[in-house]
Image (cartoon, rainbow, N blue to C red; front, side):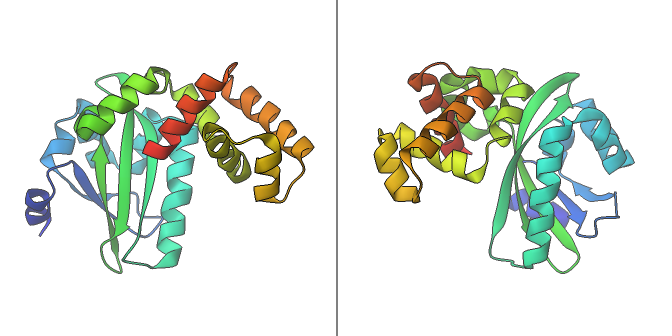
Length: 203
């Protein structure tokens, strides 16, 4: 069955038990194994090895989103998350879409920026610092849900007053959020903030 799935899905895939205490992978597609020697080690050693080759903050985000998916028990939805892992001895962004396969297993489809074609090209062009630095992803993940909403509204050209009315908060609170956003993302201009917003929309 796993080989048939790999034929249907051209991107790298892996299949894993839904049980959190099961650290083994049931299946790695050949395309994933070919991404770097670390993938063969990961398949053989399981999740303990993932801790050695992945950025801890993005890994924790992946764990949280995977756990939320398991709790929904919904076979018609999926979760997406970026991770930074070491491939060919270099920290590399890996984007994953995961869905539930059955009562026991989940399946994940993985993408490197070069696997995403035009979208991946846009990603590396509008925000090369994301592509090169795990720290940028960490700062992005540190935003609260409200802050992410405000970033998107700012990128649409909305004023503080309009954002405040829309979110039922004061314009003063919006200004405070904007200061916190700029501090977390380390941005100094509106154009930089818009680039972050574009990346948020892509992934």
